[in-house]
Structures are given as C-alpha cells and as structure tokens.
Image (cartoon, rainbow, N blue to C red; front, side, top):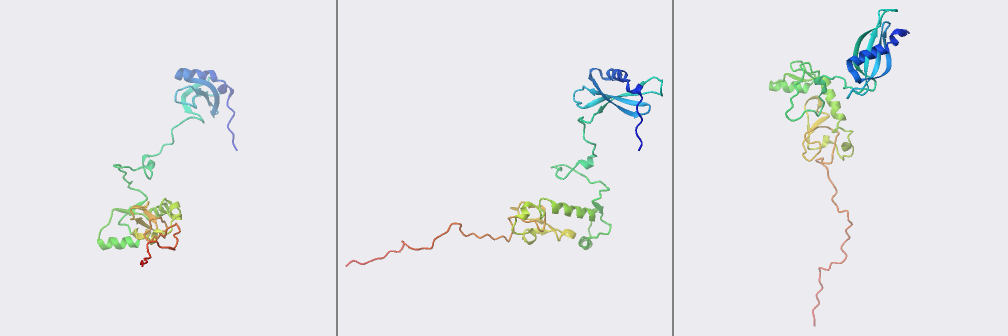
Length: 247
C-alpha cells in the first residue's frame, strides 16, 4: 500500500507567504490558518478560514510550490473552496431529470425525449396481443407506445401506490374493486389487474386502481339498517277504546 510522501518543511513553513497572497486577494476576509493539504512532492495547499458573508465553512486555499530543495517557494494559486461543513449548492441535476410526479401544473408542457425508454415505436411488433388486435381492426396506430418494461414499472407503481391493495383504505374495505360495478377495466395486458374507478363519491374516482383495492363506496355494499336502539314489543295499545253502553 503506497503512502503520500511527507511534505517538505519549506512548503509547510510558508504560512506567511500563503497568508500574504490570500490577503492580497481577499483582504480582511482571510481568517486563521486551519491546516495544510499536500498536493504532491513539490506543492502543498495552505487553508485559511474565510470571514466572508454568506460563505460559512468555506476556506481560502493557497497553493505553494517549488522546483526542488533549496529553491524558492512560490505561490501557484489562491481560490475559495468549501470546507467539510460548508453550505454548498446541491449536486447539479439536468433539467429533464428534475421533474417528478406531481410537478406538472395547469398550462405546463413536458415533452418526452426522443429516446425515452418508456416508449417504443408503434410500428415495432408489440408483445401485447390485445393491443395488436385492436390496432389491426381499426387500422390506426400511434407513433410510439409504452414498452414492456415501462408497463411493468407502471403496474408496480400503481400496485404500491395510494390505490393499491396494500393501502390503508383497501385493507379496511369490505369488498374489492374487481367486483364493483363502478370498476372500468383497462385494455391490454394490464386488464387483469387494473381499472379506472368511475364512482364520483369514491376517493379513487378517475384514478387507476388495482383490482384488489377497495373502499366504502362499493356498488354491492349492503348495510344492515336496523335500529341500534332496542324497540320493545307492543304490550298495551291505548289507541283502542272499550265502549260500554249505559243502562
């Protein structure tokens, strides 16, 4: 296992030279010397606290170097760098990767990339027989359709989502969507497991739901509407009068 070479004493001792270079660059914003960082056998970086507004935890880094023993130590560069506790911006994320589910608002436009892995050319033979039969029957098609991996990802996302069989609503429901009259099965390979809720009262109205999801608005739900208060049997009916003729 190789180890970094011990920094030269001349480079380590060039604190005043490094500070002077930092002060020339930043003036009063240069704070105390906090350490050194070896670069290679001929260079080393001195670190100073940065007393700069808005740059908490940052450091002035001054790199010094020489050509070899018994040569003059010179300043190579002075830069402001973040320290281990510095407040820095998050890592750069390309715009097309920043948009997440739920970010799209009214009037927003989000075009798909030409190489979007979720889509394939519609003229490519599909492995979804139901889709192929319908497309051939009506003679129409789309430029691109969802690929098989994309369909599987969507199915997994829906199954684990708010309207999947593991949600709190589904676990507390008396019946499943698969037997509900408001359940509208989707077409294609997802038909066996997913549909759309058409009950305006249900929380999943207009959403894709799993066949084993359920809620309290099932079409076949029947509730015992007997009174919770015990009603006693009629014992005496005072609405009936006994009439006795007088003599």
